[in-house]
Amino acid sequence: MRKPIIVGNWKMNKTNVEAKEFIVEIESYLNGNENAEYGIAAPYTCVKTCVDNAKNLLIAGENVHFEDNGAFTGEVSVPMIEELGVTHCIIGHSERREMFNETDETVNKKIKKLFKSSNIIPILCIGETLTQFEEGKTEEVIRTQLKNALVDVCGECASKLVIAYEPIWAIGTGKSATIEIAQNSCAIVRDEIKNLYGTEVASKVRVQYGGSVKPENIKEYLAQEDIDGALIGGASLKVESFKAIIDATK
Ligand code: PEP
Image 1 (cartoon, rainbow, N blue to C red):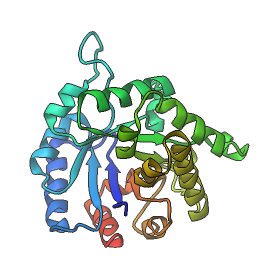
Image 2 (image 1 turned 60 degrees about the horizontal axis):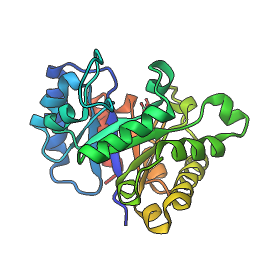
Image 3 (image 1 turned 135 degrees about the vertical axis):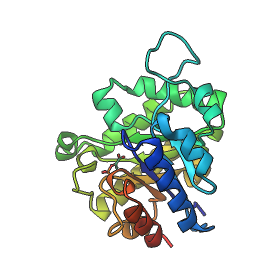
Image 4 (image 1 turned 90 degrees about the horizontal axis):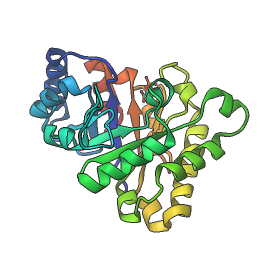
């Protein structure tokens, strides 16, 4: 039985003061709720504040470099974020792929680095553009991105992965994928993991849907066989809407 994992992605939002207020409020609202794992991916400037105030909430990074140290101005490394206390780290978010030259190759390096040097679980983001969707290439894109991201990643590591299927056309647009599209795509993710690692690993890996998830639609996504959680941008920024998401998953 896979436990759902719901992660808010704050992107480049929230000061330390705002982060503390949010985490404290959500922690008291969770009050030992164990229906799902709940987490927040926060900007590194406020990760420590989040970790210090979190009890049950998982705190994630939004990106990490694959080298331990060196001349990489503005980047942070795995030992650095491990010291901060993050349990998860988003890798390959489409915004990083589109705006910051993230490629399947750097995604693969980052995933290997996280597994080799830390206990931090990658939240691997994949998903097609609107053009690829319209051209019927979703399945091909999902399978290719997964294969490339997981080169030389062992089965034991892969079974711990969280994979976020996020159609790019649904991110931040308010235009969420239909339940059917989301379930079909998440099933393709699991099938590709089965091709790469076999049935047991495929049955353990958790697959999230992401793209305009909100309190009104999360329940239906989570009811699908191959959807084990959600990665949530906009609706994770306000305490009230994150509380409503928690309510919808009770
Ligand atoms: C995201 O940032 O991963 C995301 C899914 O954003 P939104 O929920 O705002 O579409």
